[in-house]
Image 1 (cartoon, rainbow, N blue to C red):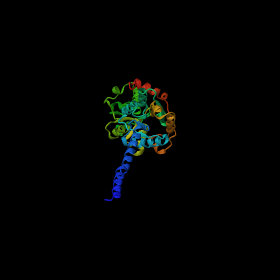
Image 2 (image 1 turned 90 degrees about the vertical axis):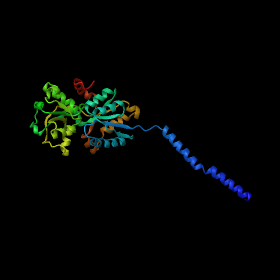
Image 3 (image 1 turned 120 degrees about the vertical axis):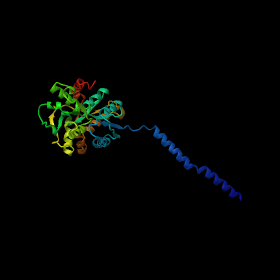
Image 4 (image 1 turned 30 degrees about the horizontal axis):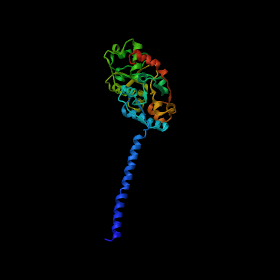
Length: 309
């Protein structure tokens, strides 16, 4: 082979070996830098919130996932709705820091704030300032609505909602004790049960599985409006006096995690919520400011029934 050709061949081989590897080398270096950057870069905090399970899972997602989207847009942070298994689980999630915000009932909110020093009730539905419950009965009982407490339900099978529900247990039990001078255990001749939710109580009374139950008025009216409950079959027989109930409560470490001004921004986002679809799903006309002090009387009742320490 001619010397010049040999030289060219050697040079080509060297160039191939030397520069033919550069694209792979560059790619590997780039991947390494990206991975290192991902490992070192702080992840954006996610605002996680939950809600007491006072309805079925599908209904709760319909209520709260659009709210998560709304808050994410207003707050410019990722927002995630985290379902809870039951009332107690929602309090535990808040207590453990698994969520920073929660939609509680009056009692669960009080329990959560008692467990997390510095936690604040920040918003409630306008209707939650004067909430009330309905005692309802299957039409087969023949019990009619009255202004006075229906003492004849003592002989009937009865169900509360969740044991931790403000409107499905705490306040109805308080008023039952006040009106009859007896505890549920002493009053109901057949004993009583806990269904777990307002919707389930209504289903049990409608089916005649239990003859009488107690639910919050918002759930009853919503189920009647949707056609899920026939008011002629599941009759309202007594309405309790009013009390403060549902609320949004936040953990005190929210500011440390999301920065100064975030709490104020969150409050403004809730209080300025005007989306009719979200408000309808929440069964609220609008959200208004709330404070821990508004639930003082409820806390007194809860302690008297040994439901809050």
